[in-house]
Length: 75
Image 1 (cartoon, rainbow, N blue to C red):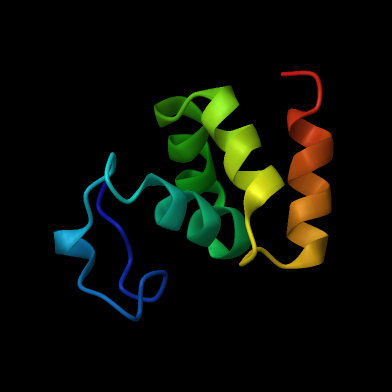
Image 2 (image 1 turned 135 degrees about the vertical axis):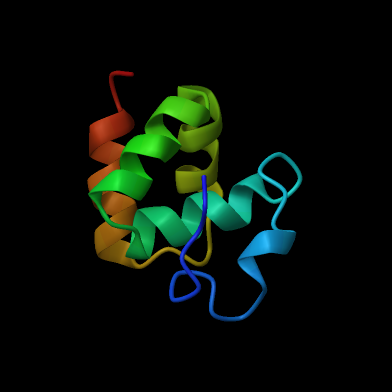
């Protein structure tokens, strides 16, 4: 996946490692990503990892956290 600079404005998207930086990527995409990025995220990461990041994140906006907690509840 080629990440948009506007999504990762604080770093060079070319330097992001999808495994090592999984939490960072998940938080940004869930909060600010477009449909294509969210679909990639959904296909790339396991549901358990997504649930874990959503549950423990201190960075996600409350609205985003609530939405994804509901969407991931039965996954």
